[in-house]
Length: 129
Length: 195
Length: 283
Image (cartoon, rainbow over the protein chains, first blue to last red):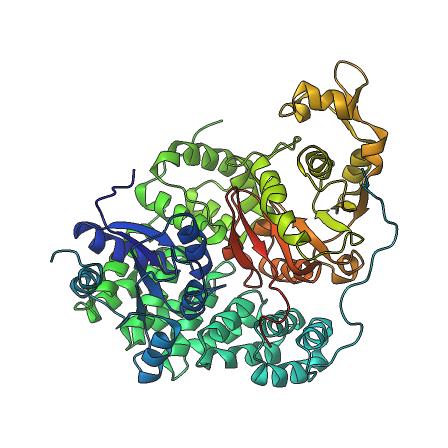
């Protein structure tokens, strides 16, 4: 059963091991974690049940992370403003710029340590450190 | 109540189209219609400048259906794109191809661009993994980029068998300081095991 | 039948991850017992002898093994008013949107494909007659298609057994069926006559193109089982068979997230459905 006191985070990545890794780190830090395989499944889940924060991979089949963010920002007010951390393998300035243009609030480069992930999530969700 | 039975139905879409047309519908119809090996060059050229997502998808589908190494290469070129949707769309189309896919896999896993090697790992998921598994293991033994190794480990977790264990172990030793990769390798080793 | 050794944690995780990736269905701890049983059944049925070789077969989808496996977890029976949340969505949300700017002379066109033995298209017809306030204002054309011509013949005949009628009130049965005997009911001629049955192969554009454009397509529990090439082709064909802004409904456990990037997702109160974009939304 969902715990209303916990901040709900949706982890969006097509790699099962990445989702597992983020889930472990975030659950240990006291967050509630949901998963989605790609941007389209993420949209379906969010439309049914909004999340407080999104962790977004870029390269995913059927709907990549940037397309997802652009579509998300056009949805209704319950979900369009959801903060998003994009986590990508791309380290260039061009990709950071593209991420911001798509509506990302933050951009991290893989591989990400559990500590880095949790620190950024805590920062963005306003949860106590 | 006027529930009706119609005997004739309107035929959908333009009857002729051209990959250069100003109309996305016409380009889409053309991309769907072109299905022979002679069309690979024009589909490939069109792909380089096409911006409408569904036309791109149709070109991908047609190239994948036509098959052959020339088509596979045209698709593989798009993996280098700056645009994520193009990259992942090309991978999805490549995955649906037949034996030329395995030949492309070998080439792409040896590409000098680490982003290409990383994305190419996905193509290894299809099929029985007879050739793909060893190719991924070879990559693990020489790969310098942890993200690429991680992508290979992720796929091996699904398709690998006990023959992958030595490469996974060696990779784990080389990248002992990498938290995600170490995590992924330990999961892979647990899951593959001996059956 | 001898049970196989129990699935290890790792085997279960490997299987779950694969099935989630492939179908979108989640097989968590709660389903473990049923997964074990299904593995036992399928290993025996395929003679694969071990989890490892069965898993390889499942991954390669030999002889439709993914569908065989998943079958045990989905309701396979067809019956009238199955998935009635989609029927509700049709009349509450989908059709109102479709008729918003429509001339009354323009028919509403609905395609049920695959329609198997006809329960779905007849259910659509009945539901509209019973639940749609505009049913007398607009012409409605309902077509049921399948690749199986024998199933279409059965659909055309419109004779069904008790199980198929289990979700229908006695009132509805009385209104739309004639009782032939204790075991068989037949759809009344008027209703039978209002649904057209035509064979169609979703993967063949030459075939599907002839059907024209629809307002709504029900395409349930096939796309997810197609191989990569077939699902790409079928998705493109279905897109072509939808009017701009038209809707497509998938099966309860299916998602376009595993099938195609061509459609936009819409969430209504009763269902998540997919839509062909309106014209002019892009270049």
